[in-house]
Amino acid sequence: MKKDVYILSGFLGSGKTTLLKQLLKSLKDHDKKPAVLMNELGSVSIDSDAVDDDTALRELLDGCICCTISEKLESQLQELLLNEDFDVLVIETTGAAHPVEVVDSILSPLFADRFEFRGILTVVDGLQWRNRGDFSPAVLHLMREQIRHAQFIIANKMDLLTEMEQGTFSYELQQMNQNAKVYLTNYSQVSMKDILSLKAQQETLTHDRASIGEHLTLQAVVYTFSGKVNGEAFEEWVKSQPDSIYRMKGYVPLQGRNYPTLFQYSYGMPLFMPGDMKYPTNFVIIGENLHKEEIVHSLQKIDLTD
Image (cartoon, rainbow, N blue to C red; front, side, top):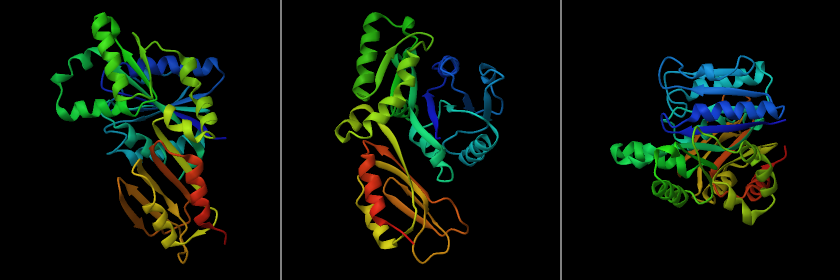
């Protein structure tokens, strides 16, 4: 059974930890065993006391989950899978994390077939957004990216804005991400039923090509090769993929090679690295508006039996 993964995103101080507490309680109320992976930029965890003792917790300190400590994340995920009993993994990212990079980090080809990415919940501080002109262009770009890739946007701290400001805020959020559901709220109070139902929505949509892009933004497709792959055919397959794919990575069992080859693709740039051992032949594709069934079918065509 794959374990569901939710990512809590949002800039520093927006209210992610408050949302985390509510999500954990709701999961337990639904007889689900959650595990938490908490990321902090500093060397000391500030919010770990938000997680009850009966919930598996791992912490990643001194860096951002999407760049400087992505290798530590991989080892923590492997350790969780080996030693903990859980149904759902909730990842609370540092406010400096880019959502695409976080999804990329959690879907390592080593265990991508063990996780089911369910969505990004982005918390946006209404007061921060109103005063966004005070931030640097880099920070403002990050905030917009966190909003753009979310499935659910929690517009938080509405009590600090006037009714007119709330209306403008809601409009601007929907303009940046027309696919996401936006909640105007205080103290990150949202409908947990809606959030947990994201699983059911995704399962029904995978069989409806026309509707996939209307409800989900950032998606992940995991494919496991069962046979050998012709190198030229694979390169042609890569070239034929749309620009809406941001990342591809995995171990490809190319013909004529003893071990699977590590393949990485980032924003149009492919990279092949010869393997030195029998890694799981999982292949991960991350992008927007992906037609999952078409991708799997096209990979099956070049996945040759031994």
